[in-house]
Length: 136
Image 1 (cartoon, rainbow, N blue to C red):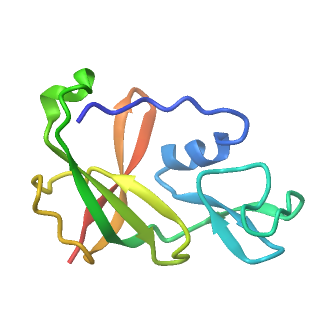
Image 2: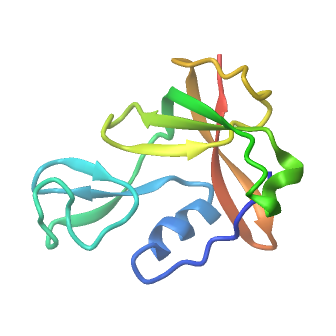
């Protein structure tokens, strides 16, 4: 599947710098002890903006559900269709979710409930993105 090259803004720069260092760094609210993704100016749970900090996380989760994309209207991605779009739930904080096409998993063969871990893939010179791979 063609990968979109991220363009970091002031809010997401720390996240993307971490990805480029092969680290998964998420916002953590010290006021309510919750993680959040994507980055936001204030905690999505308690509203605190002053207590947000960045925290390294393990990068382990599980597949909650998935769909298969096979929609011809998405012309720039048509050559790669069909492909999986899985919802990954972070084990460290189940309120945090990511999407992944699960590299290496054939369409319609997604093992829902399986463990996954973050991996990093180069999409442009000096630019990585985070993806998720099935483990175990």
